[in-house]
Amino acid sequence: MTIDVITFGCRLNAYESEAIRAAGGNEDAVVVNTCAVTAEAVRQARQSIRRIRREKPHARIVVTGCAAQTEPATFAAMTEVDRVIGNEEKFDAGAWAGGERISVGDIMAATRARQHAVEGLDGRARAFVQVQNGCDHRCTFCIIPFGRGHSRSVPVDDVVAQVRRLVENGYGEVVLTGVDITSYGGGLSDKPRLGALVKRILNDVPELARLRLSSIDSVEADDDLIDALASEPRLMPHLHLSLQAGDDLILKRMKRRHSRADAIAFCDSLRRLRPEIAFGADIIAGFPTESEVMFARSLDLVDECGLTQLHVFPFSPRPGTPAARMPQLDRALVKERARRLREKGEAALRAHLEREVGARRRALAESPSLGRTEQFIPVRLAAPAAPGAIVDLTVKGHDGRQLLGA
Image (cartoon, rainbow, N blue to C red):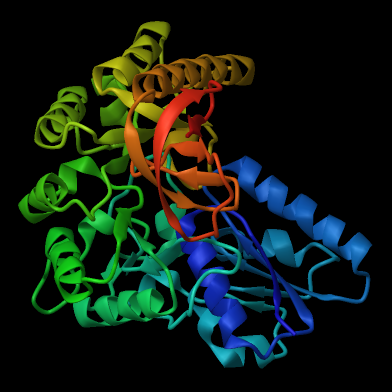
């Protein structure tokens, strides 16, 4: 019997959910692994908990993850919830076995990133490997450092061993994940950077077909990482960037460490080094004090950086963050700007799909009929393929959202 884990949020949460399943010992529980990045993410978790209780009236419901860490009382107050366990405690057997309703400690006291020996991810064609946890930056809109603690890294040898284990288990693509992976190495004795880790993996695990990075902060990208992206064909030509805005004053009020010009220069530089590279980005619409002119600069950034895939977040004030105390925009305006930004992203994706027609690509099959190209673009496969297989194809067209392979 496997543990029923419901996962919200990021790839790191997906990885940790698999580690919870692998740990065993809680087969009578339904675990809800929450996200705290927006108020909507918390609302969805609460809604899911109520649904689970209706469908499984006798199940033991345990809530963990970032929202459990930042808002333990919110979930403990729900009559449907049996236990609330913090992000650090969720890998301690004693926290699961104990009698306390809330087991949430001081996440800021955590000093090491825990490595979890997972054998793969349930139902997924690619595997995730945690290399880092936590964040030392304090963007004014972000609650995640209070859910994850300070930045801490998994030693290089441990990461390489985990990647090798996954490749031996049949995974052809591995994604390096964490909260702020470009800060990798700061807490380790020899202070390796992310680029050095990437090169070690590619060198020490030659059987690995594809290595991919999750979201990065471009201002932290080191020279070895840039060199690997330019010269290593097994490092996939796709980066998801934490940009957040296109206006310099808004970036300053967000306490971001890059400027608009920095973002554009980074994309231009990497595109010269690796012409086929594709960029996605996180952008927030409706940040406090954002004027229409400021918002227009975020719209323009999509073209100037050549972004093809957007994760758009309507600004969500998170209690305890500085941005929550700033002058807020009307919620209808925030939602309207988010809609316009999504439409801009959809148009950029369609233009990118059109440029791909006629190209030769290699796609990792996620299901018998759907794959992802090196640039992480979805492609409908012409013939059924085994999930995890890497398929050579020619792009014959698109439907506005995905490529069509031949």
